[in-house]
Image (cartoon, rainbow, N blue to C red; front, side):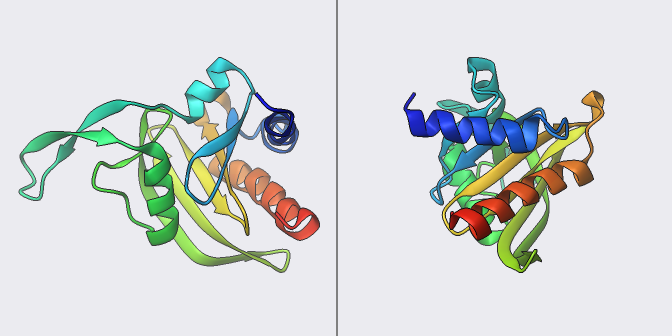
Length: 167
């Protein structure tokens, strides 16, 4: 891993994971592909990203399922851009999430972002699109983490990146 990716991982660790509000965090480009994760370990990467798998997807008839490739990076980009899930569903780290809130012009600290909130059983993720990246924080209610605190941690980092770093 390059020095820059390690620095971003340390930033994610400090701002989001070390707060205790999220068990993992990641940074993606606007293409939806992650380039840094915290914890910066194999386990941390596995929590946020998985490649090369298929999942059954319900067809328009509401009954029939078909196996489809899951492209997590493309799915994140699609969801951030449209507020809807891609045809294969919305997955990160191999986990399926339901999109529950999308705001095209979310404002905090005089900064504007795209905000996406997604949930799964007893957890979820918060995604904030800044001028140059997508910040994602993952929370787990069984670890005592809440959606509200996770959102705060992700927004705080997004504001810092966009306002103070131009990122």
